[in-house]
Length: 68
Image (tube, rainbow, N blue to C red):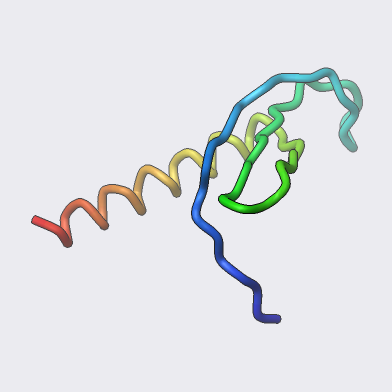
């Protein structure tokens, strides 16, 4: 399914109490605001947040290495 890619205007990382399949858990809320678009929030588990951070770091390192 094709989707439109927009550039990021700003982001925010919040925390909130929530429920998961395993019960109550502190969730990470990632709030994204694309240029020309509405702000939206996604709740993610701490494990997903760690995995996403590793993938973002790896992608940033790859792009940095390509530019060198």
